[in-house]
Length: 97
Image (cartoon, rainbow, N blue to C red; front, top):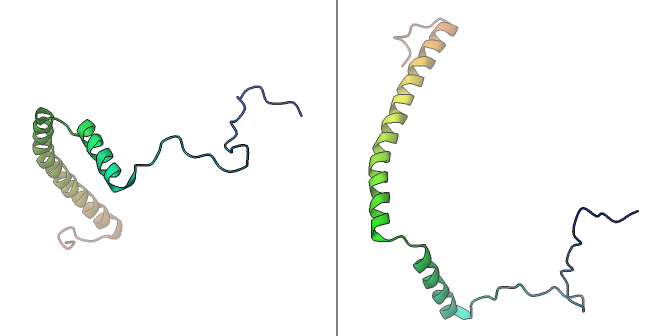
């Protein structure tokens, strides 16, 4: 069977003696190395004060708006299903809670 020319050959993941190779990135050297890595990640990923203020404003606006939307949607769907059940099964709409 001819070799596939569409794909590059896969790299051999084992060393010459058959054992698996070590990963490229080294693990932190103990507890202090872990804390040092956490600290450097936090420095890169934590937003500044202005960004936090913008995010807080968005949350303060969106949370009540989402609550109102969900409440209105719930009321609408309850009304629709109440009418639907009443018409399908012949109930009085005032009898359904």
